[in-house]
Image (tube, rainbow, N blue to C red):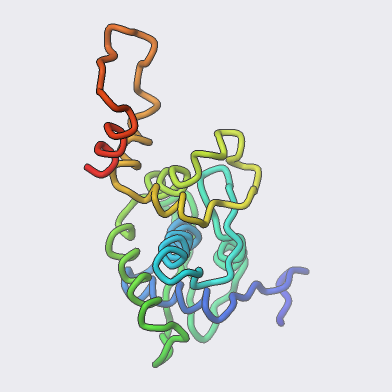
Length: 202
């Protein structure tokens, strides 16, 4: 490994690198926020549909949402290499874009893995940094507000997958503005569990 100012140049495992390459192929240059968060969604979906994550990334609860630790190190301290180039910019909070310089002819991804990466790119690739951070937080509501910034392990199982429901995300976004202190605003809904389930699936 080469050394940069006393720091080892970060490297990604082949699978995690392949996920990042594929995301860049589908979305173009990625902001640091997308590069560190979209693979988390890939691995949550892969855990459900394939029975295992695609990559071996370490996902943690950082202040602004779930972050892949290795991806953060790579996008922050990495140098251009045969596959990736980095561009500095001033129009977002991260200040750096990562782009594919020359994608390999074949990626070490199975067809099902490619399908999941492409689905994530299509459905979540257009989210801005704030909404993407909120989405990753919404998959970890069981941890509470105190978890954010504590670098705890992020949820990777079926609970996280279930919370990828668009109804859950809408509920999560609306929750801070809900006023549950006025009984006059509350109305009976019959079976609360069935009502919540139908609303989340809406």
